[in-house]
Each structure stands twice: as structure tokens, then as C-alpha cells.
Amino acid sequence: MPGIRDLKGKVAVVTGAGSGIGRATALALAAKGAKVMLADLRGDSATAVVGEIAELGGEGQLIPDDAVKIAHVFSFE
Image (cartoon, rainbow, N blue to C red; front, side, top):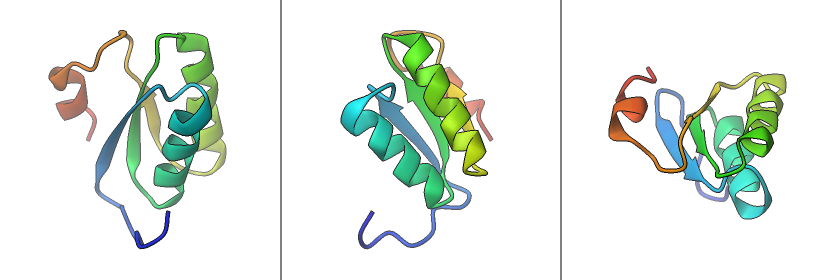
């Protein structure tokens, strides 16, 4: 991601993270050091992206719903 250097200590929430632009965004944010919360209606796809993030040495967590719930975001530290 141009212009973004370091996101260590930050948490990003990405919806539609199982494919396409959402997947690419989740991977790019993780590569910059962000912990990434992934939401997608297709949980299997997002679960695969969590695995890809782990392979990059990052941290990803699947939000187990079709909508982001603020409690999930604050529980990811």
C-alpha cells in the first residue's frame, strides 16, 4: 500500500475479505504489520485468507458473523 510504512500495533477490519479487493487489502495490511479482523459472508474463503496471513507471519482473525460487531474488534489485542 503506497504511503503506508508501518501498521504494527494497529488493528484493521476488512469486510469482504474472502476474495477480490477485500482479500488483497487484508493481505496488504497484514504485510505492513496490522492485525487484521476479516469478515465475509463466505466464512470458508475468509478462513483461507487468515491462513495466508499466518503464512506471511501476520495475525488475522475471522469475525464469525456476516456483520462486524464492535465487541469482536475490541477483543483483538
